[in-house]
Length: 101
Image (cartoon, one colour):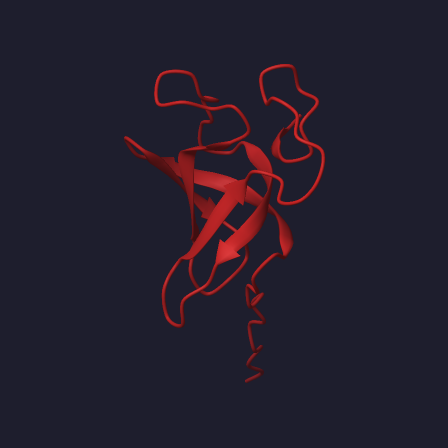
């Protein structure tokens, strides 16, 4: 019997990751980032997003985001807001982070 050891990504602060939306909740998305735990992406964590005007992502969509915070044994917080770089709106599709097509 051969056992394969699963290798998972360990999220680190400010890592850029591509994730898959697993589930949508009222104010956040659950994102698979190939880690032991999923990531959390708030619906207003996009450049120029508000509670009324934010991207609508559905399960299976790909998103390019940045790890905001990590906690041992818990989900990582993700964001699509650029830190210290050129800011662009998610609406016109010119932002660095966001949904991948």
